[in-house]
Image (cartoon, rainbow, N blue to C red; front, top):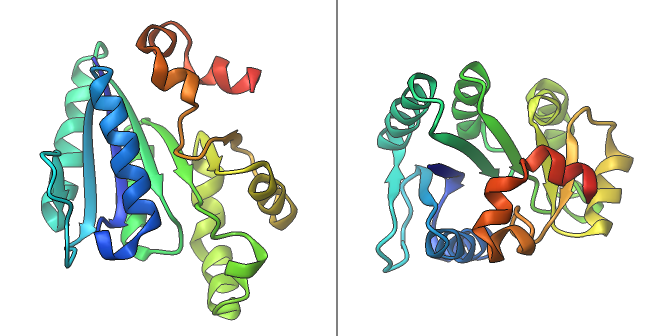
Length: 194
């Protein structure tokens, strides 16, 4: 079975964009029969009134570890971990758990490496980038950008070893429309074609 775990700093309706995007993507993936979970590393003030599998705080870390150890013991269960957003220190531990367990990692930067974003608290962001964020992005299998413009901005900011995907929600619409495409084509082969 295909399993997708979305990890975000705070899954909260008051935060807007990422939460709405993750909601839409999760619902589409569930309709196609994927097992989807959302891990919010912080407790939100307002969560969506949906019947989604959402884990918060330490429960989210525990769930991630248990699921990925199950993955190691059963190679029929395939896991993709999709991180949303950067700069948050709370995403570091889950990221390194995923790299240690050799999980396929997608990292959606969500516009946070574009000039308009970098110019806000610029010194702190450059420092964070040098200390930890650059390494995290380079260890990811894929860096996901929402637009071609964002991809160019990220590539002009730094040279990455990771492959790039351009998709508003992290997975191409072709993959979401047809589960068989997702199962027949590995994401790596698909990424090379796009």
